Length: 395
Image (cartoon, rainbow, N blue to C red; front, side):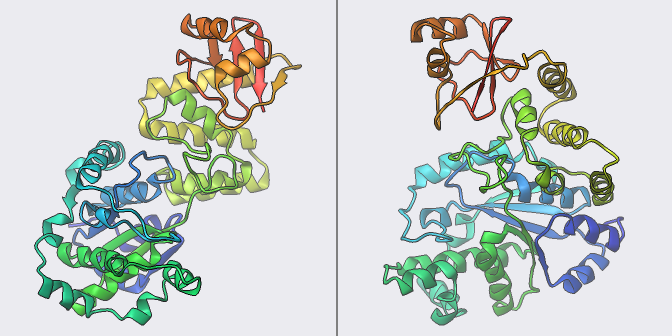
């Protein structure tokens, strides 16, 4: 039985959420006091998780802490079709081997966040592979073509006379059937997954099951404060990155996004976040100190305390104790500029071979962290230290 009262559960469940579908229904489920089945479907096509991807996983962890059970569905079957969400053309299907390889990578990463004891990891081929053609016809009869074409990406392609494969209609139908198979009580997704998640409610009703509630989490902007967090844009914080790197990246987050990051990227209680927001608004605390707390909270989710303290100390040494000269030289870099090329172009190393030698010998630090990879790529605002007294800032 769940011992946390309903109002407290709703407060935690709603923290940072963009929308909760059928909140009154959810309250009635919670009043029963039984652990609910919380569903998240993962289409394993991009297995490198950053904290933007982790937003829904963090919410599931909060639900697990309340006593509920997570069912993570690796879409090994649906992944061979590919989610058409936001796509302007039919996606090339992944092979079975590609799907399974990506699924293994996902599995390693999700348990950096979720409680393994309260997580049921399933592959949807378990039930979708067993459907015969009669079953598929029955499933497809539960939804109309007109409703399917209301989906933005399908509607846009229709208007532009771009092809839509019949098989693409089956992706949301099969994802909806996943909710039938596991009898989901709640399904989580990003706001870009609204059509797919709501399909689960529709299909459950058609199979005479209690409908799941839907919980939509907003898209998290990257550390540039503008674009959606993305590895390709270089504005991401990876959950497997070094503690020093994570800490320094969080400190780059614009002040306007501090509270959003507290809500979506940490497990702090909503009442605590409210207090932080008040102190930020009334000016009683320096935003830099609040951001340092944010960095500590995020890094502590993925690293042990000694690594967190080390990262915090490295940041203080470089950025707060004025160990960097005031007349810091700025070096212009292009996207994906290498550390080696920046050292040479800024005349801090006479040649590529000299720059590589310095890096290999441990004489180069980026943002206070020693770098040994000669292929290291710089980001804007990175501070490079060569030896004890040479510094430049990448811009």
